Length: 98
Image (cartoon, rainbow, N blue to C red; front, side):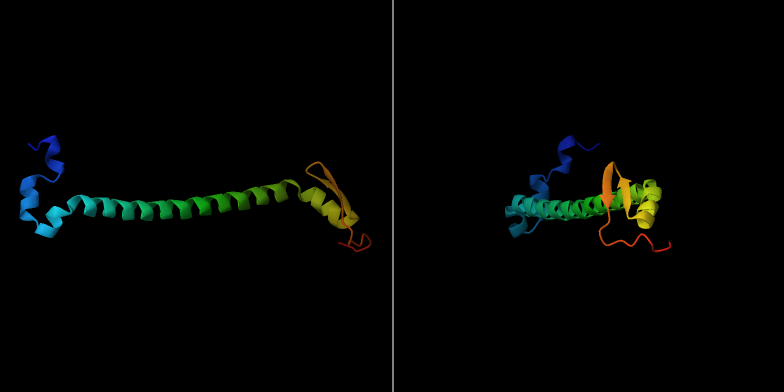
């Protein structure tokens, strides 16, 4: 049965490694972990950015869907109330048949 410390590089394992590796095992391990951490953080950052953008797109879509009737009225009359705000479209032609 393996002891709990067998996962750590023991002196016997390092003795079988090349001298340059045995002498620098700590620096190599820290460097490797730093590179892996940077890669994982980059992947998480990209995934988080995509999720936030997708969430914003969904929120805009829901907002437009919920306000579809006021937006339709706004297109016909050039005046409407959306999200509690009274809007007037300045370059609108209310005589345009939609």
